Length: 84
Image (cartoon, rainbow, N blue to C red; front, side, top):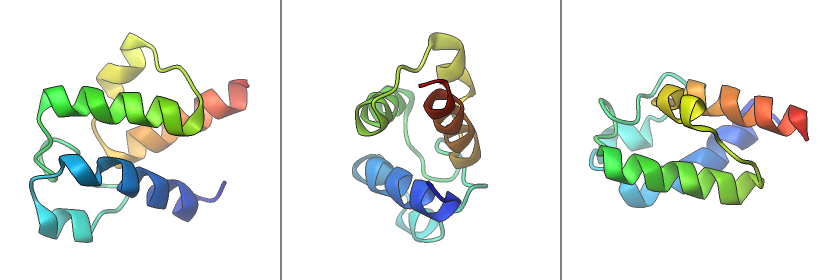
């Protein structure tokens, strides 16, 4: 999966939870879920669960703590897919 495909999938996953439309429209791998998109911590858990479902992976607690930006989410997804 290319970087662009992965970003597009993540963008679809986070869209229902965002509070900042402008930041969402400019989403890149440098986008922070909490500071830029204004996703609260409860919804961040929903994002993580949706990522698990979309990619058929299991994200452990220590990975969840790292998953606060698009770049971190991409790294974690790629790591988990490589393990399969």
